[in-house]
Image 1 (cartoon, one colour):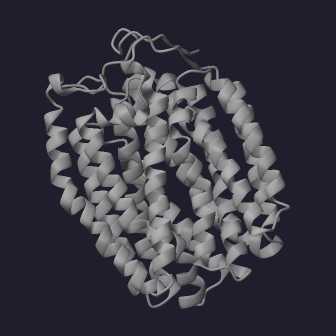
Image 2 (cartoon, rainbow, N blue to C red; image 1 turned 135 degrees about the vertical axis):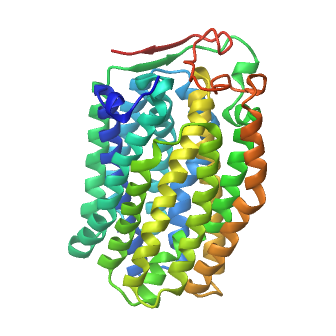
Image 3 (tube, rainbow, N blue to C red; image 1 turned 60 degrees about the vertical axis):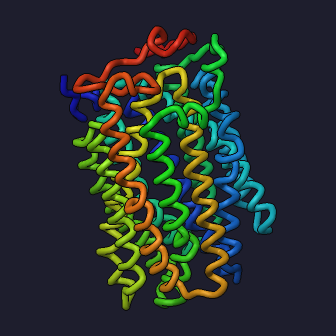
Length: 430
């Protein structure tokens, strides 16, 4: 049976979850732009900006095992409400703080909340729409979130230019209130009881290692991020110092990247098979790396726009294919742990890339760093891509399924407590 985005899109809970998360993303990205510009304009170097990014992501790594167990143990609504309220308070305090150590501590506190509510929303989505409809729902979710990504950087740049960082940070605090209200309105609630066997008590990283596709997929993803994402702490210097452009242009370029992500997200739902999703991962990584070359050689800021569109489209397709493949292969009772582990792996890789970017910025120019990112980023799909394709072909054999939800041929079976090994799993749906 075919499940189109139009059919999936009739779900009230899906749209509550999707819109709330998009609003929160808008606030988060505007706040990141504001804090990045505040650090740059106060004379802080790439090391301070790298520390800002690391502070937000480190809790996603350190707390991944704990967050995953919480999501797989406790009621989803309770986790979303309390984490959202806590983040709203922290963000409101952050708006009035300027000392760098205090800012980093508060950003880390926001990351603790994100470790919990990010995994909760990710694990809840299959319960809202059903495993068969998940690819279409993921496409809708990413498309709407990408619309927020398009607007957020420009909003953050313009508001920071007009009023300073305080207003975007207060805006972010308000979005956490919005997502908390939405969590109370979503009727679907995910309840997962205590596991009944020692095997089912394993952490998300252990579960991922059992899967022949995901272990290779996430190895490729981590290598790609570490080698190619160092430019995240450099792009502000390329725009402001090398190309001598304004804070508004910095926001516009980020918004253009978001526009490319929207293009990728809008067409992403057409790929649903494992081998197709794997090919999307590989080619997206290639195009994303090549877009960095466009940044490196651009003579003026306007010349970066085509590379931003192409890189954004590849970024959107990469996010969709990785998240969809991971959630499709995760059994219901392990989705919280798997989602938290995925976040932990990607965040660990990003932290590594930020550290590399901060170090390399001490002796290389922004153009040189973007060029290195393009070359190094290509290494991951070139060296690991063939192995990933072999793994995807292997799991067509139903005997090779590790997490119990990937189809052998054409049908996408729904996971159930009976299939997943005995734990009590109950998703309350309207």
